[in-house]
Image (tube, rainbow, N blue to C red; front, side, top):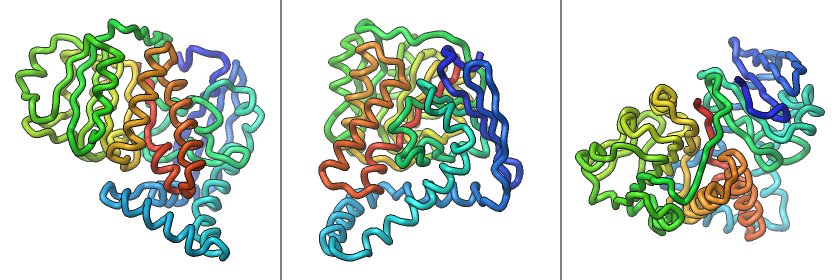
Length: 331
């Protein structure tokens, strides 16, 4: 089935050359429409992704530069000009995609995007809906396939596999997850070897913080994490705190075949520590309190966006810190 809730708006997005075909379904009603080639939506989507996605090594530099120029040019138009391009793109593409179904979005309790693989990198929930990014308004999930109505049953008896790399998890957020789920097995990156993972017969969830990208897996000190690493554990949920792993097709396909219900990972380069620490802690705390993954990430991202905006981050930096992670419903 497409969704376990009649109040979930299911939006199918496919690209045919430069035309975007959209089909939106809510509570038995379906609306089909196309965004024409002259709107240049695919090119704009790529520009949005590029604008939102700094290299990991630039995250700290971006923070200081944004703050410096925000102060230096506070009384000029430079800051507005610098921000206008991304805001204009998010507004224009959001209008193209969401104006025809605005009433459905308003009445829906959640949104599920069904993507063709060539649209995987499209940050659809960053697009503006009624003046702000959509992810601040609704819980969002993504999927590539049909899925069941099976609910994720989380309890303090859940057993997780936790692996923390010192430079990607400098504040050791994974230890806080270990406290939430005491039966979990925790490894420091330097301590874990292939035989350790082979000995774990089953795990309810996997949480790894390490360096990676959309083309490779995660390289740890003594082991490389690849799409087949966890097949024998059959985890219900996999969470990677690792740059761009939300776009890794190998993990998406392998975990789907394994029967994993949810996959959570960033589609952008995410911060080491700080915002990633807060994302891990708040997401798993909400999960432990009984929130479904989409709701847990919704509350987490909204809270972080408000926190970083209130502390003075400009829009792009607040997005880099609050937005990167995506929830996939796989099975």
